[in-house]
Amino acid sequence: RRLELDLRRALAASEFELYYQPLVNAQSSEIIGFEALLRWNHPERGQVPPAEFIPLAEEIGLIIPLGEWVLRDACREAAAWPRKLKVAVNLSPVQFRSPTLLHTAVSALGMSGLSPHRLELEITESVLLHDSAATLALLHQLRALGVRIAMDDFGTGYSSLSYLRSFPFDKIKIDRSFVRELGEKSDCLAIVKAVAGLGASLGITTTAEGVETPEQLDRVREQGCTEVQGYLFSRPRPASEVRALIDSRS
Ligand code: G
Ligand code: G
Ligand code: MN
Ligand code: NA
Image (cartoon, rainbow, N blue to C red; front, side):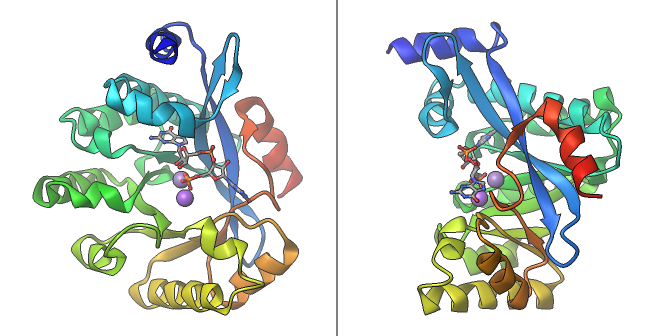
């Protein structure tokens, strides 16, 4: 459990860093915001991907202080951007079961001065699997602050459609597994089309994740996705490069 010991020290040692990936308007290709993505710069192993340490951080409870740091840092960065773009932050289901999340969001917004409507919180369907009354109440409280709520990785969990009925999401992010095979598999095209249509009729933004090629961009545009994100526009980049990304596309 060497990794666990290292992880417990990493926050105090300032080894975490947020990278930012552009969120792009599907029609105009303008940058409308950035998703913050956590990186761990391990002193010996180099950069450890989130998939390798977030489950461990959840298990040992570190995700609570780490998630607070992420929210504060992302809001602070976004408040200093040259344009009033949105910043999207991923939340772990474990953060949703903690009584501190609402206060953390209020204080991150207060400390940074970021307008609440510029903050978007990304949650996965698994958040809604647990204790749905308390979760729904919390989602409504966050919404009442003016914060937007996005459903991330849509289509990979269970009962996706019933979740859309139980809470009014502002955005659906279509999982990149559906975008990846758009060219080869007609069922992926049908799913993207159906979700984009559902978003349009419910008045919800739909983002296609993982857009890597111009062909994929054309397809998700044709199907009516309103936003796109992926390596075609940019990989996640360090905070110091955000300004250059904004300048290159406006
Ligand atoms: O950046 P990358 O594609 O490797 O991210 C992998 C996974 O880690 C994604 O599912 C993403 O949602 C998750 N992730 C990235 N940053 C954060 C974060 O700040 N908090 C939480 N809870 N998950 C994150
Ligand atoms: O689960 P979530 O959607 O938060 O995960 C975002 C992850 O997707 C990040 O780790 C990011 O690095 C990754 N990602 C973003 N764009 C692309 C892309 O175009 N292709 C692939 N393969 N991964 C991507
Ligand atoms: Mn995400
Ligand atoms: Na996702």
